[in-house]
Image (cartoon, rainbow, N blue to C red):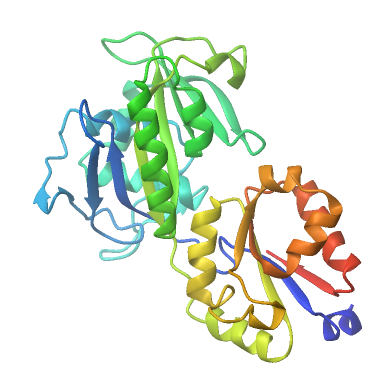
Amino acid sequence: AVETLGSTTVICSDKTGTLTRNEMTAVALWLPANQGRGRHVEVSGSGYALHGSFSQDGQPLPSADPALQPLLHAAALCNDALLQPPVDDGGDWAVQGDPTEAALRVLAAKAGIDLAALDAAAPREAELPFDADVQLMATRHRLPRAPRTVFVKGSPEAVLRLCSGPTPVHHVAAARHVAEAMATRALRVLAFARIDDETLDGGFDALAGRAALLGLVGQIDPPRDEVRQAIAACRAAGVRTVMLTGDHKLTGLAIARALGIAGEGELAKEGGGAWRAVDGTELERMGERELHDALTAIAVFSRVQPAQKLRIVRALQARGEVVAMTG
C-alpha cells in the first residue's frame, strides 16, 4: 500500500468533510411568489449558533412572514438531526446527526421557532428515509388545524419533478434557475415541498404531480484552510486531484476553482479548453471511449453513485494512472 501511494498520480477525493469543513450554515433562501422571479432572502449568522436575522433586498424581514414559515417548518420537521444546548455559558451548541440537517434546524431556530414545541405539535407518523438514488426524503406529520401533511426534502431537480401539478410552471422554472445560480456561489441547495395528503405507501413515485413547492435553502460549507496548500503541494509533485461529490456539479466546480483543483491555465498542456464538471446522469450516457478521452479535462464528478465512482477509478487506471481515493 505504501509503495502504491508513493506512485500515485491521481487522488479522487470526496468534497464534504474532506475538502470542506462539514460545518453547514444556511445563508440564502428563495420563496416562490405570485409574480416575477420569487423572493430572495438572506440569512445572517454562522455555524450552529442560533443567532441570526433574515433580510430581503437589504431590509429586515419578519420571521413570521407567512411565506417563510411553511418553508422553515418543513426544514425543521423533515429532518433527523438534533440540537443540544451548550453545557457551559457561551459554549457551542452540539449536533447529533447530519450537519446539513442540523443547519436546517438552526435556520428554523433563528426565526424564533421553538423546535421542541414544533416537534410535539406536529409528530412524525411515517417517513420515507433519504434515498441517495432518488435524492429525496419525505415525512408525514399530524398538524394542528390541518390534515395530515407530507413534507418532502431533496435536491432541487428531484423535488421539482414532483411539483408539476400544484405548483405553477413558471415557479418551477424560476426555482430551477435560482438553484443553479445558488450552486455557482458554491452553495449546497435543497428544495422543499408540501403535500396535504397522508399517503406514503406508494414510495416517492406516488408523490409525483402532487407536491406544492415551498422554496429553496442554500447552505455554505467553507473549504478547509489547509486544503488549498495540500492540493498545490500534490500538483507540484505531479499528483492531480479530482473531486467526487454528491452536490450539484456547479457547486462542486465552484469549490474546485476556489481550492485550485480546477485552476485557470492548467489545461494548456492538454491542449487548452476549460475544466469540466460531469454529473451522474451525464456519466451514465458516456461510453467508455468518450469517458477515457474526457478524463483529462474533468475536475468534478457530481451526483455520482458508488458504482459510478468505481467506474471512474477504473477508467483512470485504464489510462495508466495510479489512483488513490479518500473521503
